[in-house]
Image 1 (cartoon, rainbow, N blue to C red):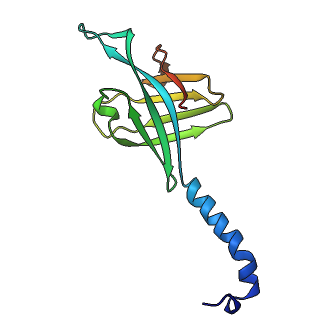
Image 2 (spheres, rainbow, N blue to C red):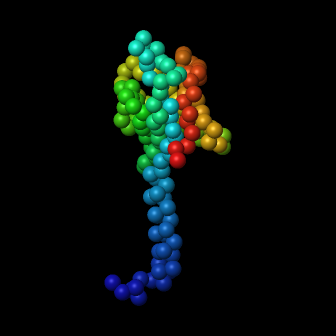
Image 3 (cartoon, rainbow, N blue to C red):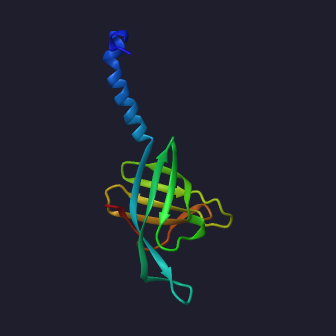
Length: 142
């Protein structure tokens, strides 16, 4: 098809429309990843602050939905695979709440400071969110 058959208005605006469509396509599949310190259990069944694996957590937004992935050694069954997640962002914080598909799993969330200085893992106890008290890093993965 010869470009002379395309009206002048379309010839002028098509490049801008194509650029906008490409930007929207890229925005619909954005991912963020943070380093995560995952603690291991000792022989006695307790977690040890001296025994851990460095892994990552990531959130990817696809088609208007958020998905969570956890990678760090032997991952708890409640967090395996790609899970739907509720993600909220303010200027200061990103909060990620993965939705486990298994019964009996703790409700957890990650509250990450957007300045890159880390964050907290919190567990839901009744109606309250409680920090788990461990340093999980939660710094941007480089």
